Image 1 (cartoon, helix red, strand yellow):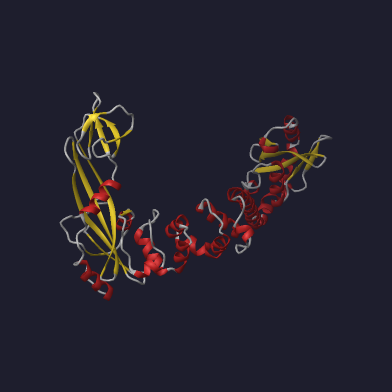
Image 2 (cartoon, helix red, strand yellow):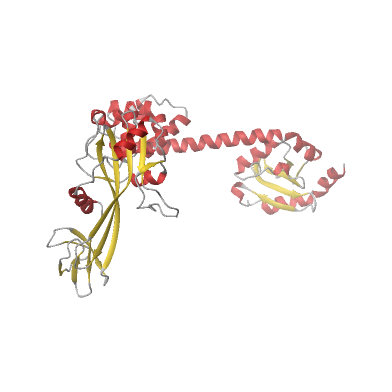
Length: 421
């Protein structure tokens, strides 16, 4: 990729002047970015893979090497070879440009010998004072694996992509160097599991990130950098959090809680809502409120859709309207409107309305009642004139179930007459 902008030309020039990393930095990466093992044979003979020292060990899972004092994980095996790899970063400045250098360390272990380390630089993130970035990296080859690099290629200008970003989110070697603007904006100490290039870019281009960092809220900042839309939405409320020094125990829960408050029409500039005494309890309470609100909206939408079908329903079933029969106690009558179907379903907690039984052309739905109290809902086939189902509250049969079916079957002739009329 050829340099086109002034910044890219500066990066190409600076890229050639970077010095190799030091042995001290390699040693730090070996000690802090890789797991450390000891192989133990069935006889108890244990070998430290870091220094090759051998001794007898009786501990179960972890121990310290008597020679190099490394903390080791014990592995019971007869293997004599192993290999491991990791990524780490060195943060430095070159030609007044901030740069994150990402290295891959491959370590090859052989029992009884010191490990062999191979360190290769794979990507460099160049960051200007205004937050603009450029990438110089090795060429990637085709394949399913993330770290398929052509190690014989040069570190040249490349288009940034998700692979480089993922690899760059790694451990940072301490005692790093930053440009004055980053130091002024509060970058010091650890990166707190925040991807270095993302943090530095955001810190140079977004004053809100500087405010959060200088308030010492690195955990909150990690969430906002990983989810920039949340920062845009929450910022007015988060300023109240900073002013009140309110501790947020779970950023994900707090952001979800704010979105539910907004959905329920609450004031997100009010500390009473933004800084609840019990975040999880309020989150659960508004989650229930939102569930009820969605249920109401769903029913309203269903009713609107149902009213659009009212004319079609009347065309199919109007001939049965007003039909009613009784045995002296139970009264069975035809449901004569779409709203009546929904009222029936809501009263008895079944789906006669929601499942749009009013649009079924070959069935008739009747309501069985005692003194205007709904008992069961009956569905009758208009082809066979047999009862397909009769459901009480929550789709359960009532003590009047057989009596209702018998009453409907006894009066089927009335329905037949309406069919002919």
